[in-house]
Amino acid sequence: MKHAPNNSPAQSLPVYAADSFVVTQGANLGDPLSYAAELMLDDVYQLTPAAVPERLTLHATDETHLTVAEGSALGTTGAAIHLDCALTLMSPDGQITDALVLVEVDGAGDIDAIYLLPLAGLLPRAPYALVGIDREGARAKFAHLSCARFTRGTHITMASGLQTPIEKLRVGDRVLTRNDGVQEVRWIGQSTVRAVGDFAPIRIRAGTLNNLHDLIVSPDHRLFIYQREDRLGAGRSELLVKARHLVNGDSVTVQDGGFVDYFELLFDTHQIIYAEGIAAESMLIDTRTKPVVPDEVSARLTEGTDAGLSGLDVKETLLDRPDAAELLRRASTR
Image (tube, rainbow, N blue to C red; front, side, top):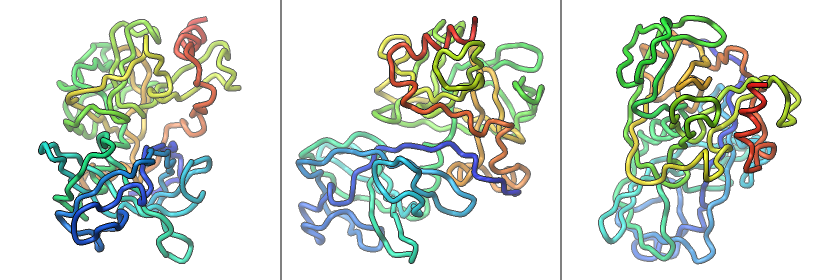
């Protein structure tokens, strides 16, 4: 696989510092969360009374690790982050929660901090038994969180103009892209996950961004907006906006609860395609997402190629207003 400069968007994750998740029963009684080699199955953990998730913002690199991005609430900017292991936690009622252990290391390679990234909400004062430690599957679990994902039923615009539900697409189908015309689908990924908390999908109601039908995507999925008038104050006409940053409780909402079927579309390079009439990104191959793609597929692709999309991400501060979606709708039509 060819390597390109780091053009990946920053990813902000809700994590707990290790000392917020402490063993209350078991061999490591009183100890905070640690890395896989020091963990013991059947130890029971609990969030401390003052525990709150904080944002760890990461960039992908061309190496096998991630780095702490500028502006992250936790960590040292530029420090390496390793995905140490995936944990399976069980509450007293038998409910299973998956979580990832992330380890921050300093320039000498020594551990500087450890973080817990739960893939579903953890309840305060609830005991969680550690029933599984997976050192091999952490990267794949994290990759699914990082992919641009569409939900079952999303209509994709084909080369012919036909609107096809994403679950009916096949490898080799020809899809219309914004920048490179007609492109063939190279790989389609599918997964079913719990739609909870920070990882629940985002629903963009019909008409919100001039879309004919509702569009439901993963929270960090980026939408492409062309502003005819810079109503947002971004200083440019072409924008990439994360779906989660448009949530306003009305026209853009979080679909929390149950399970969701996600699909990922991969082309020779990162593309902007049309989903329910909204320009939205396809899957981007980088350090975070590569583990979910079969080796024989990724070997033919160009890592990090962004079809001219680098630098188009909008800062969250510009979108921190209830009328952000409406401003973008009007900016793109006038």
